[in-house]
Length: 68
Image 1 (tube, helix red, strand yellow):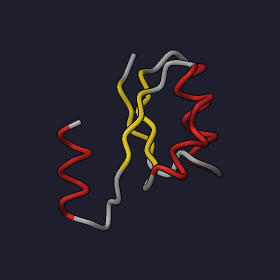
Image 2: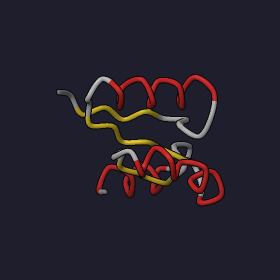
Image 3: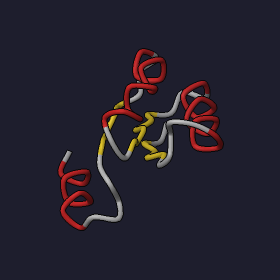
Image 4: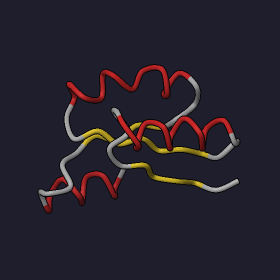
């Protein structure tokens, strides 16, 4: 089992990848750039994914994500 960070998990390919990895038994960390987008990740978190919120275009945001 691997630990995988999936950026852009709120929709599209990122969400599909997170769902697939969870189904395959991996430890998945889903990412959303803000709390509004994070609200849409409840079903993945309910399935066992961990959630990090932050903006990768902001250096301090990246540090907060890495620390969590």
